[in-house]
Length: 380
Image 1 (cartoon, rainbow, N blue to C red):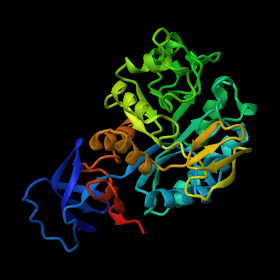
Image 2 (cartoon, rainbow, N blue to C red):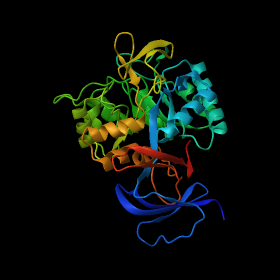
Image 3 (tube, helix red, strand yellow):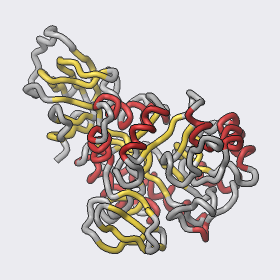
Image 4 (cartoon, rainbow, N blue to C red):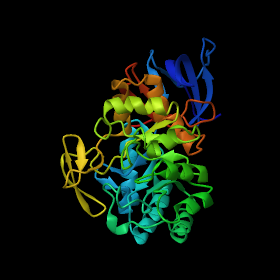
């Protein structure tokens, strides 16, 4: 018999609502869920939750950095430091996300990811793949991306990066109006293509979704606005039920009213993401972003000209803010856990279900974090 622990007398987030019960964990896996008084299980290790709430560990599909580290540095040690920090914040899985970089640096990031995933401590956040935000993005909507490294979709580079990462690139961000983009989207069958940093109109976005794109990067940001005679990417995505979108709900990138609008436009199809940079978890001051200077001030990260360059909030803070802005607690939790995991077809994380990893956040009814478990082990 393996290492077993029973979490009892808690309110567990099961299929979009909370249920009183107990959860049996064996060797880091959820083995049995009891939602009634039938959990009279005699275990050597019992954790009495005393009515605490339990949600899945959060899944961040879009994060560039934290605690002074940046995915784009191509440092395995830096990725491990990020993983350690994120787990302590309740984010137990993440997609390390690059900025727009030259080929050599992208290859270095792939090497660093594989090494970091090999040496990562078991009680830190899981690195569930890589995400490339660039270099196939629009110059007109590049935001804080470095224009020097932007290029049109390049199948040869893309295949090289997939090989170098051992097939671990889960999401590729792409502007569908670029030359060759639609053919590129149509040819890619393994990674999720996300429409991003784009000037695409409604018709072009629709063609991208028909070609196989199924996601939209940081909704409302770095794309044309949704207008009544020009619905753009947002309109094209909202009316297609197979398309999901992601949202930065830090209260800086998107107004609280538009957070509520986003959840209305994409019911059960909206993923919360952080889009955090290396300034996350760091003091205010000047930092580097792929060779560009950025400043952390008053909870914002900007370029010298004031352009927003990413977020200073982790995903757990974004979850709390979404609830503060009026999103139902259960809806926000689903958007930060189960949906992101499902979006990249990962059936091991993101939900409290038998057979999944016991990556759990113990909190109070207002979601104030008390303890984090990764594989059933408490994060210290």
